[in-house]
Length: 196
Image (cartoon, rainbow, N blue to C red; front, side):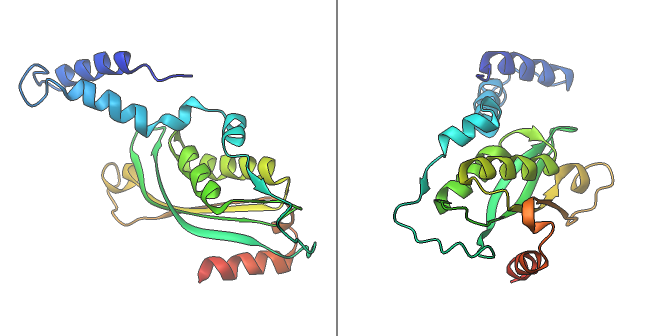
């Protein structure tokens, strides 16, 4: 899928008129084009399915790594900063921090790939819960591990700047898969690592 920047330009021009402004005035005449370009960057994750993101970042390390098959070893990364947009109001979800954990299953993914996956998934119209679910699905496919956890904390413009207008309100979502659901030791490790 590609983003139709020309259609976005036309619609933004219409929104400016609907707001009662003149899209031909000096300060606004290039705004439709700028917004279309911004949307193309901001929503680039919408151009790719989860399977296409898997293909994009499907680089793992197997030969150079000794994995001792300790079923309680965890790879954990936190404070991955992303942003996204709520599909209900197109409002910014910001100050978002993602934590990702998985139990290796004979292969690991490069650390930068985990951050790139989170960033790409964030660049869609969606709910915060969907971000966690999509990151988990992609990571499971790349690592062949069922044991994946994703924790996301963020602020939502639809809560902080409109409607109820409660700045500082944080939403935390968890996506827990595999043994993170059933193994108390793994779950406790996850909680301890996230709390640090």
